[in-house]
Length: 237
Image (cartoon, rainbow, N blue to C red; front, top):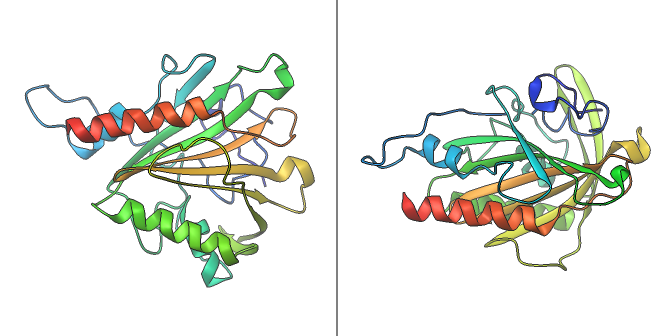
């Protein structure tokens, strides 16, 4: 299982993103910015909230350019308690569907060792009031009992193991969950770190890998800046 370079969004990262084609293909919902005289639409609000290459030092953002790039279609987890994990990267989740979403690929080159470069597939989404909290609650509950599941997409079945992450580290938003998903068939190259953060009625989800396939970490500055932008746009809207 690999994230495949299906568009320009992954230019420069081919071969470095081993896990997620079965979790997600890669996204973007584009929308023009509105006039300052009118309230922003949800699409404009979420698009304006997305990180840019100017927001965090040493981080480059390649925004996605097509609605089919980030979230995949509906998929059913083999275990009901694992369904929230399968829903996280689906445009047709079983329960809570976002009003709008966008995203792209973040490349973090802050580490001096070029092999420690991290690449994160990011999706930010805006929900109806209260639903973003329900999404995070469901993920947290799933991680207490779900240690692995299988899904079928496009006629291909993929099996994953799931390991909850540590609760240590800075608070990144109103809620957060961190976990690792592995494809046992691929070993170290089939491992991705998933981080999902809530900011009000919005979420920011990241799939992160390292260039050398060692254990990845999402730099807190990235998530904190994204949270700040999501909060600011919701307040302004």
